[in-house]
Image 1 (cartoon, rainbow, N blue to C red):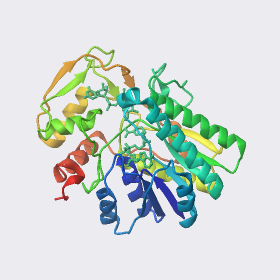
Image 2 (tube, helix red, strand yellow):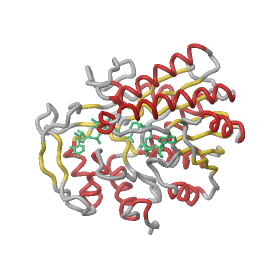
Image 3 (cartoon, protein in one colour):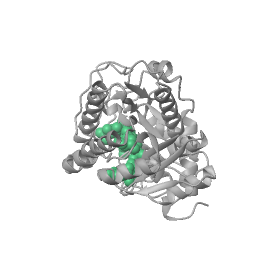
Image 4 (tube, rainbow, N blue to C red):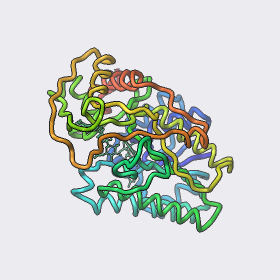
Length: 343
Ligand code: NAD
Ligand code: UD1
């Protein structure tokens, strides 16, 4: 079976390509390289020993997508392509609605015209907004506090409407908690451009000397040490969840033709616990100072994982030490990301 992977050159997409290739699927990557590097595709080939089919293309070009879907006989799609920076989404919201919402609409239209009716979609725990209870179950009310989050919610609604219109469509909406880590080979990993917004990439840049210190956003939350608590999940576990979701959808064994499921570990770690864990893994001191809370941040956010276990027969296995160790291995082997050869 050939699976189209949009955004397959990006952080999570590249790990997903490895998982699907190693599971025996043929894949075709569609990526416009707006936030990624061609080198990641070469690294996927190096890890798997398989040639990758890649189309440098934009998901907003419907004719081209139809050509690709038909030319490669694709039977399913895993859809990662999109813009993902929360702060940026408040500055250029139209670009986010265009790329994420219009892009997904265009992709769905191309799929409909090509008879491809199965999609896994990258959603986010951000759709839960301020938690009303923890751990977060999939039936927790949804709300979004920024344009990025709203694009995820709108797409989820669009997928539910399409699923309701025709039972042949099959959608797996996967709500990621906080993906971190890298492939254990150190060949692919997260490669943020500019100043990282997220915690783990920022910590790595303090560890390798690119940044002087981490600003810990808030130490007065009602958490065990006052800093924000999140559910960090190893990217390898995350993509294994995609593989399971794909298998469940393809087998037709899902209870409904559109499900939303959390992909997290169920464990929450504070910012200070992350700092300590990274110091253990890297043997480096992570200097930090406390700064005011970041707008839009919640105190605590972690997943209830029961539905994922039940529906997908999947559970995250890698612990925090593995997440930090694999991240540090990737950074040490690629001090300038994909710009220089892996050592
Ligand atoms: P990423 O930026 O590394 O990957 C996205 C890829 O999509 C990039 O390679 C980019 O070049 C490509 N792309 C963007 N717009 C495109 C377009 N119009 N046409 C073709 N390709 C396009 O991001 P990621 O961290 O791998 O995230 C993948 C998906 O998961 C995104 O949809 C993101 O919103 C979602 N997500 C990510 C996180 C996270 O923490 N990384 C958390 C929750 C959800
Ligand atoms: C952020 C996004 C969220 C997205 C998620 C995964 C915001 C407001 N939310 O969530 O929509 O789904 O990433 O990509 O951007 N922290 C620091 N210092 C830093 C960076 C982060 O203290 O320099 C803290 C944060 O306050 C938070 C924790 O570290 O408590 C994790 O932050 P981050 O990695 O940005 O993820 P989220 O805030 O969970």
